[in-house]
View 1 (tube, rainbow, N blue to C red):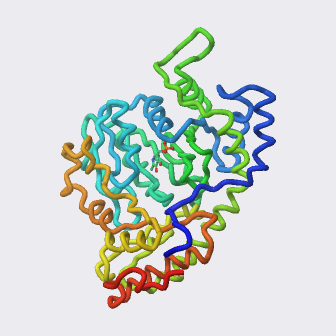
View 2 (view 1 turned 45 degrees about the vertical axis):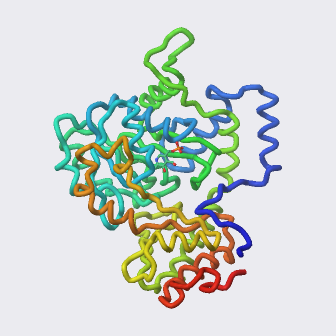
Length: 386
Ligand SMILES: Cc1ncc(COP(=O)(O)O)c(C=O)c1O
């Protein structure tokens, strides 16, 4: 029926031969982890590339989140968004912290600052917002509230690699920001993550925490964890960094092409990318509105029949999962915007190796299904199959 299954993303990999010299260096040195030379090089290179002062690398973004909360000694209740990947809230449970879900803004799909104050209690110690899809939060409004109530702010910036606002990297905001370098991300190290820290002292504390709490050979200062990134992941990151600008540029091209092709399709709404001075085009979310002949789930299924695996990020909401749904803040009456968006959103394939022809396949199905007569027909009748 179709030439190749298209997934919502495909990890970006440089040519294999470019990685071999890095491996040879590792084999020669026999330093495999514990802050080796590639680890140090990558921390420095990322600071330069991203325009931030201090970075601590991690084995993945989840460990970075868990450790970020530990490093600031966050306890009690933390205000966060239900509209994210589940690791955001899981990091709170792993620290024995109670998540308090607050609804999202209908335009940015990020935590709505206008709703935060009403959720603050004497137990609230921090806010954990997400720059969802790499679109910056209203960082000024969030910081004002944090300052007024003496709260810490930790940004889950897992989607926001390379994103800049008018003043520079979006990662400079808050007390800490965490990144994910998972295979599905704009910049990947197979698995990986990082904490962006404001000063050397905080980075040092985080470096201890990610190494079991060891301060020196005989001193353990805290119940730390093993969060270290290995040399092989760090070496791969050094190589990926050489390719990341080209990868983001191609993502930008695909983003523009989707907008040009879908802008006029009644009932499909492309989220505007208006919050950043530099986007990373990590995702291409659309909202399937009432004016479209198919529901979101019917369109999702129709795309699958054509070998196109779009994803419903973020459905279900985090607050609907069993470990969260009993919380008072998880009730859907408290989260009407997030609940509505999560029923309508669909993320389309976007990644550097997606060809124009493959993207056209996606566009053809979306356009064909916009015509009611076609929408009701069998998939291979509605769109000519290659
Ligand atoms: C918003 C968000 N937070 C946290 C994470 C966790 O990152 P990792 O998969 O690197 O542990 C992800 C990852 O997929 C994410 O999308």
